[in-house]
Image (tube, rainbow, N blue to C red; front, side, top):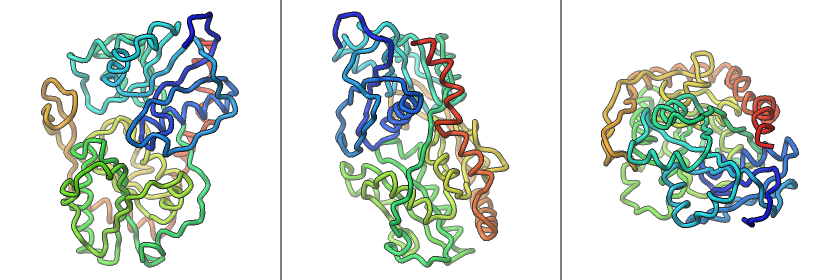
Length: 363
């Protein structure tokens, strides 16, 4: 950034071309600014998968603006400040669009929250964790979730799945904490469900597996009814994958937001999900088969950057099997109509009215 007088607008700083949730947060915000015809610049932070996502926005410029928005964890923001302090000294206002996935934020990282003037986050669950620690302005502002048009790819045909079979889907990133995403429980619940409905299939879409050792995936059984997709999919191909599925099963222990749950709703999939954390803002008994849970202690070895024990949920797997049976029954009647209606609330158009007055205060 230059040291001259900065224009009114937004510098977006994060993982703009990396296929990861934080990168999608930046891209979603950029698309919102594009929709509102507000100019912005982008600084793309390098990752091991940088460049995998192609971006092109007509309102993106090379200008330096007076407000910067950091799309990363607070801890990553601290690391960035140590390497590039000018990114924090030059803008007039700094916003951290931060994520956190536990009910409390660690005291040892509280100073990272103070690097920014204001904190934005996607759900009330995350908002409470940040505000309780920092007491600074913290807004719960979900970002748009916009699915791309399908490409026509036939995943059922490729995976040799019958057109009439009931297909359960779950996606997770190996760079997220697998303890938190809990895909092992998804497999266990599906195998129990198979004892009742032996013609069903489970598709596991695994992101960023390349840098992991094979032993880290040894918990996935070799089973003819469990299909694995490891390749990076284009946004339209993700729509094809959702279209090929009937149900999305998430037995997460905690989520800051849960983008794939919203995407699944938008595509009409029946949802079976843990009833805890960020998704409580938009999941309810009308659009989801909610799974009960009990409280479980999280230790610093279970979750990165913790300095003391915290807690999250332990979903009831027996209840999840029961709810999966309910989703199977509902799928025979229609897609998830209420989910489609509720998923539409995350469109650019639906969120623009909420964002525009806030954005104007920075312009």
